[in-house]
Image: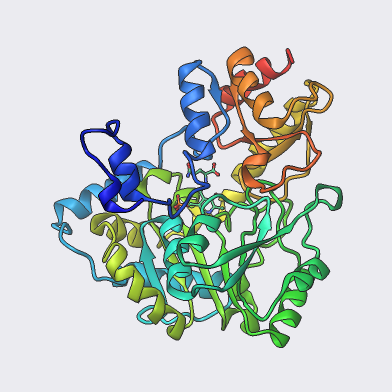
Length: 400
Ligand code: PMP
Ligand code: GLN
């Protein structure tokens, strides 16, 4: 609307501002499903197995280290790329876990959570007109990040019927001269699928023939079950040289509220990443970084995480046997999908809303991760909860 058309005295309050704002940069975005379901859970006093966060506190030793860092005066800006001790610690971890040497000064950046790292990587490297392949069901922050960069998300569907494995022929079919990047997220939220060795081989073959960047969201890297290793893209030299690996301390250290993550990438990619990072946040919470650097000297907390969550998965999945919900296999993450077709034919959003209101259990409808919902009747449960919380949920689900 031309500016002259806005007559202050004639328009309803807010309408003038709407005209000023014009078309939204993110027209499809509303409040995230995680926020909506957590609010509904609180409203109805439901057991919240929706949004992914543990319902216990992080380690007392970690909190004590934060207090020490604050007392020691680590309270001013951290260096833009992150506190050197933490970057050095992460370089050693990446080397020990995945055999890849990242230069702590030039290839590791500490971020305000994985969400910021993902947005920063995409804004830094995706140009207007570029296409970016994502796998659906897809974590909700990728597509808005791509759209803000002026790119186009190109979804490749992971099919329930094939256990949500990547169909590499489908990936190849979606490549175009404009494909700039593939975003991967394994262990995968919400399906719990992990990468297998042949996936890395397929990906290596693909990038050998196509000039592609890879963004690998590995926030659940330490939650992988049944003795399988986590296949970080950093394990493959041919992939690591074009990959930004993103992770987060939120999941690994039971501190999702701290919002500290990191991005490991070859120096030229990191240089571009930091150009955006330094004007998006400049630097990240200083005392927490000092505390994390010291806490991570002991690998036990992250090395023990898979066994810790595997026991929870097993107990929760065994408990579901007494309900009419059918869990799908879960190889990693702290989420499990459950099929409710035996209970209801409703679309998953309606079912999830009714589950909170009438049965007092919150879950996430899988359609929230999809542009075109499939025929499956699936909801996602988060089992990062104490035993009594999980038992209360199972007791309620048994009445479905
Ligand atoms: N990626 C995935 C797949 C996630 O599930 C989450 C949040 N749980 C994030 C990124 C965001 O991590 P952070 O809270 O560190 O921003
Ligand atoms: N990643 C968390 C989940 O998948 C939620 C994070 C958020 O609320 N944005 O449940």
